[in-house]
Length: 147
Image (cartoon, rainbow, N blue to C red; front, top):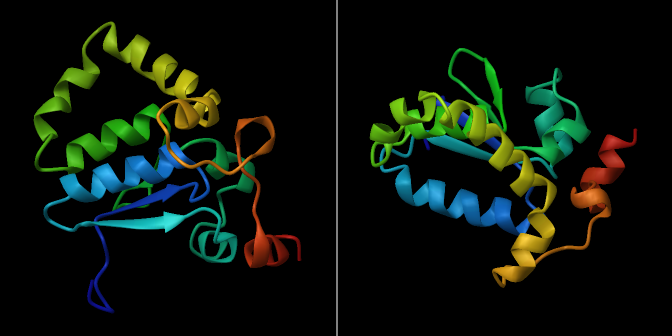
């Protein structure tokens, strides 16, 4: 991306989460326009400087998608926003608003988020042991965050 270019959408994800990493790899493949920027929540100083309204616990618990207008979509809403933004799957976007899907989608997302470490292990995705299903900041990111 050019130095002065602004992405259409920013995805903030937990870089220590195996399912999150795999999801970002899939999103990158689907992002044929290269219009999405990916920001690892473990790099807290950068996340906090760009989005001071977000909290560590929140961003480490669910995907956060920042739209071009600055609106933040979390969890299932973030996935739905991404679907709208990805040329190869944009046709799914209206389906995600159908009755039943709007009820089921957030519940499925929450279940996956709550069990992401077990799911990662089951799928053979490398995982970092984390407390309570979410990973806390590690290394230099933790030092900056604790200042």
